[in-house]
Length: 180
Figure (tube, rainbow, N blue to C red):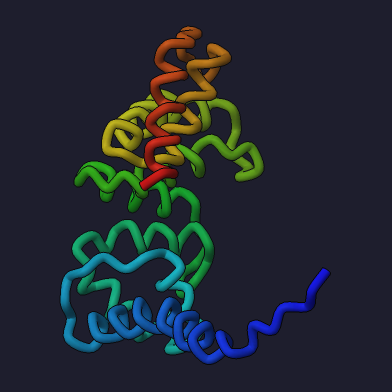
């Protein structure tokens, strides 16, 4: 096999890789300093907390279009807040009522995790609400919610009747998102 020399491409690749990582960060940092209302991601929140601390994170979160979602993340993970799953669910619930599909999915995941130390009555009380949020998140185009819902329909789980047609529709939707 011939040894290919691709070193002449290295400077371009380095610039390209830096641009991929720096452009979103520069946009994010610009939004932080000018208090624009573009939605940051949960990863950007983690980076901000790591790099700038809790005070900067609180300031930035307060200027987000939906700060409740990020406060929920902070309570769920214990970043800059006391780890409190009940408070996290309350913040995710508030955000979900404003049609934040990520908060809806987060509510579903957190409320259905057995390792949270909730008794069965608490978990049962949240099941219906979490399924409503999961279905709405899928309707809003959240691919993770659509995936979980497709499994629920495929196997007749999560309190849903088995429906292969709906499961396949959701899988087709997920595939269409992958190709975009």
